[in-house]
Length: 467
Image (tube, rainbow, N blue to C red; front, side, top):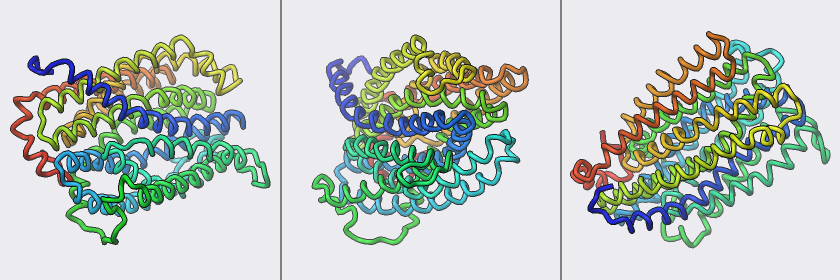
């Protein structure tokens, strides 16, 4: 923060960011709880089912992080248009985002279909393959709906309205819990499908969320003046290309990070069901805690983008500093909870003594990466607000795949340290990303360096990213 900027605006920015982020955090927590519910139901069904869901979930998110990242171009674009007073341009951009989301969803459906038949060549343990394939074949039907839901959610968040993310997130959870149980174990006249039932239940939940969000956007007074669904427009390459120019590097960046965790899960899946199940428990807890900094990062993206739209260079840095302050506090709480309560947390998931012992030890490693994980995702969110996405993509690739994966694979598989070695790789990759992305934002957001670019950034809101 520049010494000429008074502290009071920063305190106000912290409050604004916290209010904006709270529903996002709760919405992400609800999403994390979906994986928790899946893991809980699968764990009660059996260790083999839990291991199958672990592998299936990893292979599901491997392609899905690409459309998620690409569609993350929408919040900064919308917030910059809003901050610049160009609200009539929001609805046409949103309609093009829907076309892009649908195309991405269809492509991801095809990839998941292929993945369900590739478990053997990947090297997944034979006893895990049938359940993992069934899970993928069920959940793939929900992928187009998830992509459309994300486009609608990111529009709403870009306009500083985050409550629907929370409400629809928990609404989906209330649908998934009984439906997932019934389709896994067989209840209320529904057949018992094991891991495949959990995948199908997740797909049905995704369609319910997407349709509910569309009805809300069409009827809510808050969005009526925008005319989001006022007319039908065919795909327009110019607008879609602008979203891709900003979003594709984000998608690759998210893939770099998500791929590190997914590849770790797949490599651990080659070690056997006990290791895979223990990793699933620990990574599920870590993922739940990650929902907090992820929500804060999305709120920071919107706040930084809005400051860009109103051409406020000091506001850009205040928005990011507010996010950093909150995320450091929340990550401290997460780390303390994992250290103090690791055994109690694991006991909620499983009664298998071997799985529980390994999972409890892995939670200590998860505690160690809470701070670097929070800093790197917050930094990436702040950079997205500037639509600075290309260089961060390279920094992410270096951190996760130049440092994290080689170290984790070398320790975990090469030296035989198992899951613990793989988790050391996760810590190293996240630490490097935190250092590089945080430094990038601090340099890019210096008022003297940013001010000359502000008018150009605001003028191209909703279009392509600047180099």
